[in-house]
Amino acid sequence: MEEKKFDFNSFIGMLLLGGILLWYLNSRKPEVDTEKPNTTPTEQTTTANPATNIIDNDGLVTNDSLRQVALKNQLGAFALSAINGKDGETVIENDVIQLTISNKGGQITKALVKNFKTYDSLPLHIINNKNANFNINFGTTDNRILNTQDLLFEPKETKNGDNTILSMKLKVSDSQFLEYRYEIKSKNDYRIGFAVRSQGLSSVINSSQDINLDWNLKSLRKEKSMRTENTYTYYYYKENGDVDYLQMKDDEVASDIEWVAYKQHFFSAALLTDTPFNDAKLKSVDYLGEDVDSLHTKTFSLKTPLALKNGELNYNMEWYYGPTDYNLLSTYEGTDLKEISDLGWGIFGFLNRTIFYPVFNVLKGFLGNYGLIIILMTIVVRIILSPVLYKSYLSSAKMKVIRPEMEEINKKYPGSENAMKRQQEVMAVQRKAGVSMMSGCIPALLQMPVFFALFKFFPTNIDFRQKAFLWVNDLSSYDIVAKLPFNIPLYGNHISLFPILASIAIFFYMKMNQSQQSAMQAPTQEGMPDMSKMMKYMIYFSPIMMLFFFNNHASGLSLYYFISNLLTIAIMFVIKNYVIDEKKIHAQIEENKKKPVKKSKFRERLDAAMKQAQEQQEAQKRAAQKKKK
Image 1 (cartoon, rainbow, N blue to C red):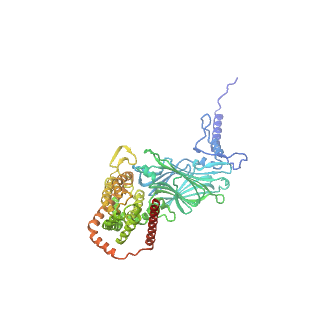
Image 2: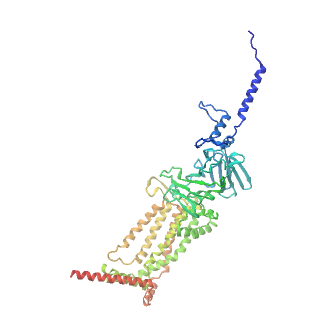
Image 3: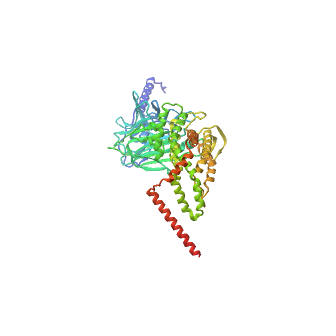
């Protein structure tokens, strides 16, 4: 039998044929089948990483040809993006904001606000560590349900001076795609242009199914006091031209939405749209417990259907990632974004907008120390309210002069049966002296709007954030001079010095004011509580209450009330000892008594009503006496 010999030429030929076959299998792409299956049910498609190879049951990686077939079966027309796409990120930025945008989902995965730090000196991110998600969910004509968050977009960045454009395309082909377009227009603007548009997808996207935009964000902790940060964290939105926010209920369905804003105390994330959202579902959930180590405060979500125009998506929008700065947001004309600054409602917001912010802006123009700015603002407020304080003291001095006469009236008309007559006589004396019991309430009433306006102004004004003064590191938060090893309910686990100083000043103010209030108070009548005793209790109760109340609030607010009460004490001392002359007041009252008193129509009606009531009381008294007989 002849022995077979090795054929070297045949061996070389077999190697060449094998190489050609491998090249063919790895380079040939399957044709995209656009024919719509007749019986394929709609499937929800999610791809954790569509760019990876397919692994078979034995754990072996198959070749790219089978991978492409699997992606085509999974994604249909959008398989091209998965086949050609690559995982990666693109960073676009200007001088104030830096955005990291992922190829996967074409969405923002990091939003860094430059020039700001967290309470623990870390870079300040509004978006980081997967705390946010942006997705568009839609159906296709080949009965698939796709989510953009699972698909790979193709990035293309262009720059022209300060202008940066990043186009993220989810492609079916070069002429058919869904595009997210990000645009930075200025080097100092926190607003980023954002457009969602499609081209050539009218035959790919199923117009009979809802196309939903979902934007979710879990707000990251940025401030020292989580409780305070959570207090000023709200979901704002502009509906039908009016700005509103989610209140006690945690969700809302709204239409004609121009923007939504996830406002977290000093920083906000907002999405504005030229084409209003309709039937939008807004939701806010309190994520904060009492755990001081928690990283988040609240979760926000927006789910809204998008409308097709001629079978295509075309939405021009805008992102805002930046500080909740009233002065800054006021420059964004036509948006009403300044309303998220939370200056208070009604007269309180009016005072902040028209008085306190203008005064503050003037002062910070030539002063860099924000503690001194607060002190100067306090002086301005006290000067404005000093005429009211003078009127109050003048009225108390008059009441002190006529007090003996009112005591005589009490003695002349004793008993509850003479209450009406006694009241008439007291009012007659006060009217002749030109004194009104309401004059003592007016200063307090006028100061209440100021109190509540400033209660919003200091904790929400970002200019005070992380500004130091004396021992205070952050005027927008509480100061700490000592940490407690335990927690006191309502007070906290720390001691703040400014609230203590403010409470001491309040105590001495109320102590000094006690004599004034006693003078203004009419003599105690039978059956009525002794107000002087209640005032004595208030002298001690009010400072303690304020101490507990302010211990966890902005130290700038405590500084204001400390300086305000010191100035009030000084003004009261000057008015009492150098301005008001009780002898002149007494002489003036005697002159007033000689003059005829002109009654207003209201006073005439009031006197007539009191006289009628007195006559009825006397008639009932006589009737009761007849029954006894």
